[in-house]
Length: 135
Image 1 (cartoon, rainbow, N blue to C red):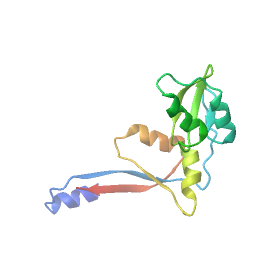
Image 2 (cartoon, one colour):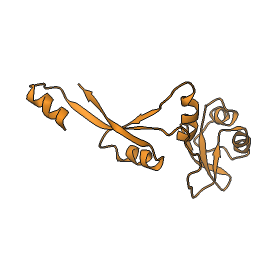
Image 3 (cartoon, rainbow, N blue to C red):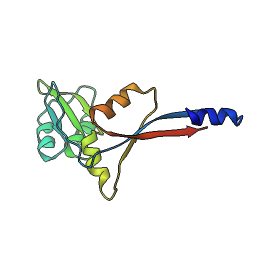
C-alpha cells in the first residue's frame, strides 16, 4: 500500500480505493460445470427458449425480447421446462463480442468484492495488477 502511504504523507485527504485488475484470455471457454441445463442466446438456444414456460414475473412482451434475440446476449439455467436463472451478460458471450477490434479486455473490481473476485478466479482471468481510484 505504498500509494496509500504516499497520499497520507502528502497530507492528501482524498479517499483511495483499489482492487485487482485482470485480463481475459484470448479465447474464453463457454463450458463451465452447471448442475442445470444451460441455454445460450445463439439460434439454437433462442429456439429452445421459445418452448419454455414464461416465468411468472415476466410480462409476455418482456419475455419476447430475450427469446427473439432483441435483449442481446444471455444464458439461461433451466429446470422442468422453466428458466430459473437468466444472466444477460454471460462472460463468454460478452468477451467474444467485446473483443472485436480490441487487443486486450480488462476486468477490475474492488478488493472487498469477494463475489466479483470469485468470478475472475472461475473464469481463470490473468491477474494484471491493481487499479486505483482517488476521490
